[in-house]
Length: 187
Image: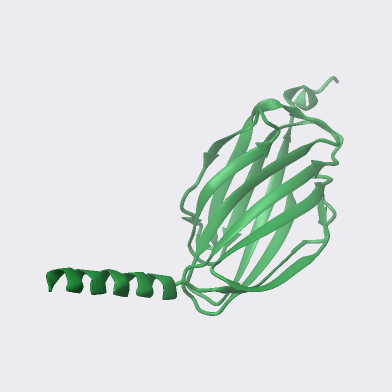
């Protein structure tokens, strides 16, 4: 009898956990149209609690901004897996790349990665967004490889988990840092 009760409890917990997450019903993104970051607008209608988003764009100056809008069927906790492939179209080589993520609600980051260049790494990131009084902010810093030249690419990604509303906006601010030689004034 105890075994049957335990099995029923486990099944009830699994059922509750599988039904307590929100499904993402729509995702769209675009740049903020200031010319610093340029991408083709994209949208997806779906019905899943974990949704992958692949972003391809060109960074012409800093900072560049990508705006992601997410709609869900409830205010529970969906996950957005964001994968970026950003081409360096600036006139300088990048030796560091900082990404600031902001939302109006608390959120967390997991699975923070960099795929290209192969010798780059995640130097630091905020697993839980920090309340700045105007929004919530998490920062990711990519670094330690050889410079990314003009025409080169950085591929990076993260999973963002959030809750509290059925409509969300995520701003991804991208700041490439020039190699130190470019910072020296030759006056």
